[in-house]
Amino acid sequence: MENLVKYIAQHLVEYGDELDVQAVEKDNEVVIEVRVKESDMGKIIGKKGRIAKDIRTIVKAATANETKKYIVEIIE
Image 1 (tube, rainbow, N blue to C red):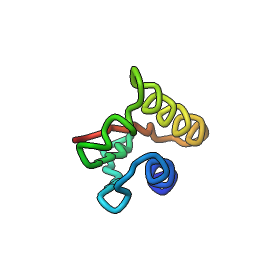
Image 2 (cartoon, one colour):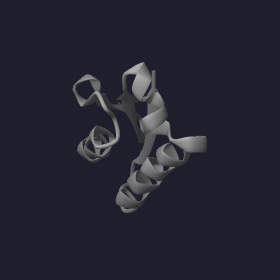
Image 3 (cartoon, rainbow, N blue to C red):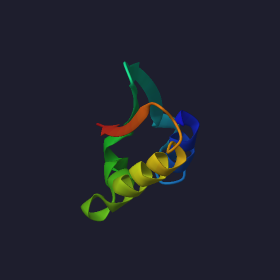
Image 4 (cartoon, rainbow, N blue to C red):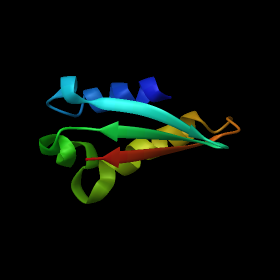
């Protein structure tokens, strides 16, 4: 799932080389942390958070059959 989020984010941001995507496992959930350059925050979040919501929707759909809960967090 980490690779899917990274692939999507790379195509949205201008500075893909400064993109960092890490998965952190806690109990029964996996938190996917996305870190981008400050100037790319608007591109990854989108107007009114629509792009971020869409990324979360894609991850939720892709992990529907998984037992773990996947959460996407965008961090400055």
